[in-house]
Amino acid sequence: MTSTTNYRTFSRLASEVPPAPPPAMTARERRSLSLDGLRDRRGAEMAYLSALKILTKTQEDLKRAVAGQMALMQTAVPGAQESLYVLGPSGTGKSTAVLEAAFRVYRDSLEKHGQVGVTDPVLEVPGWSHDLIPVIWANIRSDASGKAAVGQIRSFLLDGEPRGTAWQITNELPKVLPRHGVSLVVLDDVHNLGTRGKNAEEVLMTLKNLQTDLGLLRIAFVYLGNADSKTGEYNLSLHDQLSQRLIPYQVDHFDLDQRDDSAPQNVAWVDYLLQWEEALVHLLPDLQRGDLAAKAGFKLWTMTKGSPGALIGILKRYTRDLLLDEPPRSLGVDRSRLLATPATFKYSSIGRGQ
Image (tube, rainbow, N blue to C red; front, side, top):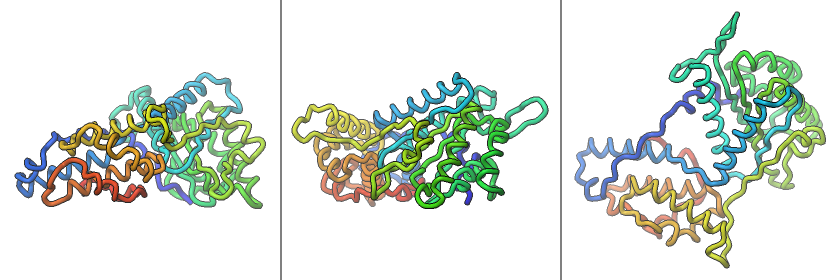
C-alpha cells in the first residue's frame, strides 16, 4: 500500500507561489468584457479563489507549535523523544496548518543547502549524493497495519511497494532518512491505523520503535488524528508506552456564546469572517464590510457548527457560483443565496480554472 503523495508532489506544492488577486472589477465592467476577456478573467479569479487560504488563530498557533518542536529536536540529546500529537475533529484545519509548517521546513532546508529554485534538489555528502527530501508527509489509509504505516514513509522517498516486514522496513529507515536530509516526518489520519484487535500491539509498537529511531536521529515526528467516532478515544493514547511519548495538542471548532456578543470566542469568529471579507473583495467588489460578520455571522456558525473547513466550503462555493453567473447581476452578498449553500465542504468542488 503506497502513499498517493511522493516527495516530488510535495516539493511542487511547497514551491508554488499563490496567485495574486486580480484587479477588482464591478459586475458592469465584467459584462462589457469580450468572450476571450471573460474567459481569461474567470481563469484568474478561479486560480486565486482555489489557492485562497486564511488560517485561524488556532491554526497559526499550531504552526508555531510545529516550529517549536523542530527547534527542540535540533538541540535535543539524541535518544527517545516526545512527538506532537495533533488532535481534533475533521474540519478544524489540523492538516492545513501542519502542512503550512511543513512547507516552511522544506523551504528553509532548501535555502540552508543552497538549493532554492532547483527542480530536483540534491544533498551532497562526501562519497555520495541523494535527493534532498527534508519533509516526509504520509496520509494513513484505512485500517493500516504497522507495515503500511512505515511503508508509506518509505514509499514517499521511492515510488513502488516497499518490500519486507514492518520490522525490516522500520530498521531500514534510520539508514535511509539521513541520506535524504529528512528533518520532519508527519503521519496524517493516524485514526485510520488498525489499533484494535489482534494486530493492535504490532501497529503501536512499530510506531514506538520508529519514534525512538527518529529521536536518535533528531528528526521531528508529528501525528495528526481524529477521535474514534464511537468511543471518542484517540487511538495512539491507548498504548501505555507510546502515549507517554506524545505531546497532545488539541484543535477545536469555533465556539460561540449566544448570551454575550463581546465574548472572546465571538470576537474570534467575527474577526475570521472579516478576514474573508477582505480577501473576497478582490472578486466581489460590491461586498460591504459586515456583510458576512454582522449580517450572516450567526447563521453561518449554526450551519457550520463552527467548522473552519465547512465555512470555507460555503464561502468559496458561493463566490464561485456568483462569478460563473451569466451575466452577474451583482458582485456582493445575496444573504439568502449564501445561506442556502450546503455546509459540507468538498475540496473537489473548487478547481483551478473552472
